[in-house]
Image 1 (tube, each protein chain N blue to C red):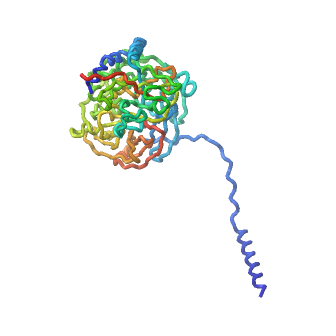
Image 2: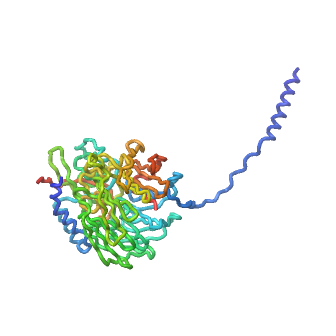
Image 3: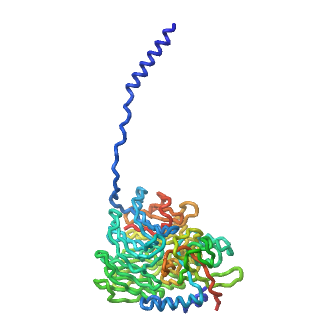
Length: 172
Length: 386
């Protein structure tokens, strides 16, 4: 899927600039600009539902095998009072996120997905799900699901994760 | 002959009476007791610090101290919200970088580094950080000591990447150093910190005696983050760290000099296995330094399975790069190995933490499973044995 990665070459370059402290505000500005075009994303880590264990349940938002969860890591907000695209009541979405590229077997298209975290309450603890298609380590944060993407929220506690379609990934 | 039963009764009564008088006295009451605080026994090479992310209630992570000989839990160090943990070079102190919220799960955020005396498991000092701590899964490069113990480095991700330099003796934050495009803190020598870069390079920053930057240099690329990324979970070696790639390449890096030196790359898998068998875990390898043995949780799987735990542990000779053994892990149901650590003595134990929250104790020479400690926390993802 390297062609899909080209889609995000520009955003990756933006992210590469994020490392300067002095440019942090500018970087956040760029993040937020991106957020206006494409909703932002989520967080998290290890778990019980593993990629190799996945059984086909590609249409169930409360299933780790839901197609758009291909790089999610955390608790599914669909099981925590929210949905796959909404945070549970009383939580706040993270303004910054990581992204994945997932294949929808329903229409045969690949989609860019934003994995936002929902923040401000302690761990939901339900429907823990860890999938890592095209996920990258911490040195590429835009593709990393190990980080707590609530990190920039006023209340930085991690509660659960959603997956928001940003658009179709066009193949070159 | 009515007198016969009467006589018998008298005799029986006398006998019972005699027997009663010969019975031991009632035991004395239990003595009153005094509540004390247990002291740790003398440390052994088989103690292991098991970090539990406590992912189901992440504001309450902790470190369990576990004895691999007696299978006893010796004590606990608290680690706050998704803490990161490491040990001092002399093994006398545990450092935890973590976050607390003023109202438990919410409220004002305080990032802090906490030090614990390993002889007492009591906290001894804390240093409050700027609210920039890298909130990520456990890794020995989230917080780390310099080789001489004079500095502590803390990875910051906001998501801008930098790191803090701390003076643990005086409880002070000395400064912050930008690491544009690179992340985490890989310590070497008394005054060097390297970071892994998205470009596949290592950034190495050299500090002065006050913890401020005096030089920085970028290495040549040694991996391709698109084609075959390296895990950030480096494995300590005698001269540096070894990094494994998603596909099983082994990058041995000597950090003993001013700049990192890269050994020729070799592979955990042969041509037939490549892309089919691969390493995967949260702590993806352990090395016995004097035996030169590398232990890696391996599983059969494709792209995207790099955090699936191991169904087997593969053992390699670092001198010859030859695989010495494949140990299938039957640790209860479908449990997979999520973290490994090995003691450094000549009768080494291999510790294998699973995604069922258990920790197995194995003979590191034979692979024999000596014990399975059930539920050593929720999500034991990193183990240390200073």
